[in-house]
Image 1 (cartoon, rainbow, N blue to C red):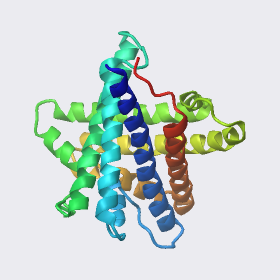
Image 2: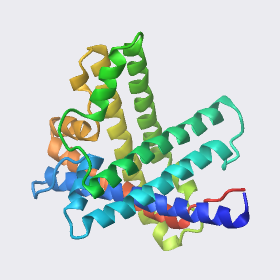
Image 3: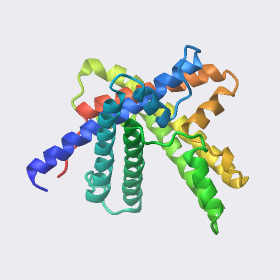
Image 4: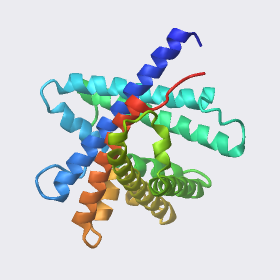
Length: 266
């Protein structure tokens, strides 16, 4: 790839990390407000976009956010296809690159949703979560139940991986040349963020497995379902508030990663 194009892709990827950070901060802030009773709501990504749309110039802001999310999506596909981290062709490496591609698909889809809401063309009817629709489709196919269970288990696995990163602090390897005075704060912010993300993914995966096992698509819910699950547990509002603040911390980490991560195409 020509040098100028490489620079353009690398800069756009950094914009993408910042856009991802904004989404997490919005979702975390809205849900934290709901948890402590000062407004807000248990928010999905779509809810965060709808709140942003209500601001002056919200449609334009959503357009910018969607463009940033496309940057993140393209970077994930670039990582998967060009093997930017030189992971090789081992089973573990191929699994990681496949995960990058899946992440690219998810954030590309999220960008489309943001664009549609920004343009006012999105269908905001509450006809069920995306997860519920996926389960419904899968249960109509041969072996669909077991495929759905596998997807749920993979989601739980991803959640456990996020928790492992929080415990081992391995995420700090993703930022380079960080000012010493910022290291301690970012480490705490990142640990809270990856732990919260891991908890949310584990719950989403559990709900997905439960829906598939009971063949009841309504049990499958996304982020909002995970938040409701937390809130209905003992000390639920406090736990939900803590997880929400953690997601804000993850958003902050994404901003720092946008500035200090070693994003390059060799």
